[in-house]
Image (tube, rainbow over all chains, first blue to last red; front, side, top):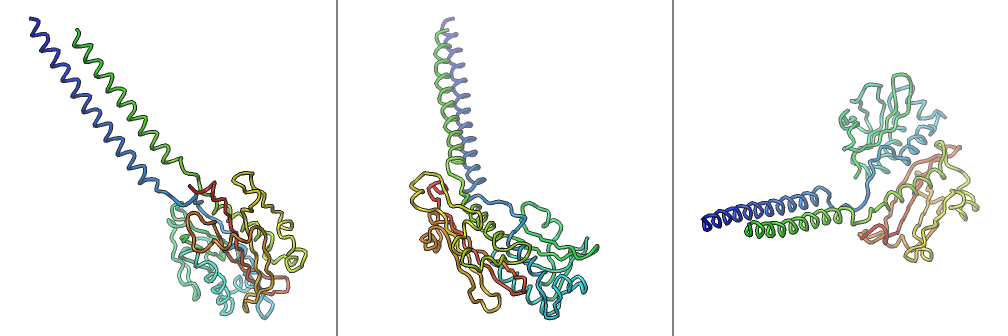
Length: 164
Length: 167
């Protein structure tokens, strides 16, 4: 009778030990996975990066650009407002300013006239405005967009997309 | 009954082992995430650049005062800036900031103004950039004066503060 009880107790002990042994291994494995996953999810970054949606220097450049007068004394703002496209001299000046200063910092630089809806405008100096609504409003694709109103329908838009 | 007690003891050892394992794992994850300082020097350099730009050009026009000697002799005062830092790591004796402002004629690239403030030694460590070197930010913008003269404004901002931002 006594021997039978001992055998039963031993069985219970072995059962508990196996349970805890498996539980320990499971916990160690889960911990290891968590640690490895967290080290991949948060890579060692070089610094804090802010999502940039404004660029003070680019907006200053754009404002000064629109205030620049041509040989006839007319500002670039007035010329674009009237014609809705760049004159040769104004387009070249825009290209010189924005491509020279900002193409090192951003992967795409575009300047041109857009209407209130339009996202598919193009001109001879900056080409087609190849940014979609998804890119413009997605926080994961940071961009800088500066707009100066020309009239009720049209705006002059500087788009700097994709911080290098 | 005695065997049951023995089994409990073995289980309580497992409990402690698991407790320490979990605690060690959580500690490791927290330390690996929060153990390093945030490097905010690039943001600081950006703020410094923006403040200088605001001082140099307002409403699209170049502040013509920057062409005068009084401005060039007191860039920080004129732009309402100071390079005071906390009294740590001997920073009080070694300035942690440097800023250089250049104004060039836009077409000819002839230098009209060059003015700087802060620790000029810092700019020598900008290239080659490494983890322990100061953060350098070199940016440009376009401006005009009231006479429609066109200018290129270059601003170099350097922030050191390596001890608090890099580990």
